[in-house]
Length: 309
Image (cartoon, rainbow, N blue to C red):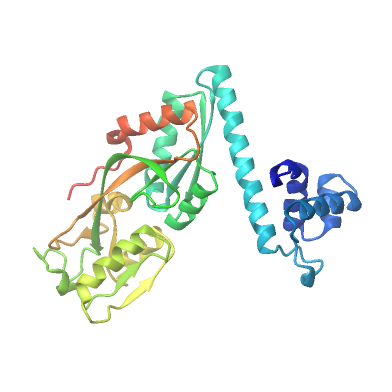
């Protein structure tokens, strides 16, 4: 008999409840079961996988073993798969009615609400849930099947995805209007070596791009940097003179338009990247996801910010 013949959703649900609420007593209360009933579900799960799911040395803390963590991830993926199946069943039942979870990297949050608003008008029977994270967070969610579709830059290698280009994604170096380099023409990257760069946190796609650019700027020299965890704080830092930043032009379209920030004229910039709509290949697209993906590709000009560079 295989593992899958012995493992039940009840067992996995008990595992998740204890992991979240730290004790069997608390989990039993949430599940409306007795403590012995929850204990029995965990015991059967451990017998099925021939491993402990909780650390016996950390009694009463709900600390998962590596095997327990693997089973909890499996349960989360099962739940995501079932949710997708129910969404597809609903779509099949009603033709075009259904729900969709759209994941976007944080740089895309500046135009993602416009997408949701347009879809609400043009596909009113599609309920779109928007989730935002940095590149690493979005990729991790893709692995767990949490998104029907995702908008991001360079597609990941893992998990395997289907990716369609939806439009250009330029990156520029921003500075305050009174910066000494503002208005200079054809700056060479090495001329920026004395500047402080404000950059995103590790895990951000913009951080990766900035580090590559800084390697060209600094050569063997060390470039002064300050790390911040959002594009908004980076914009404010640059506006107030902390430094300059390499950033998506789509995140600063408004500030460039009203003159609160200016793009520096640097040889080789803007760096042109591409936006993609992505779906994991191991999860079959629902009919709703197919419809929205097609809409995103066809209507990119209507929601991607227009930036004159």
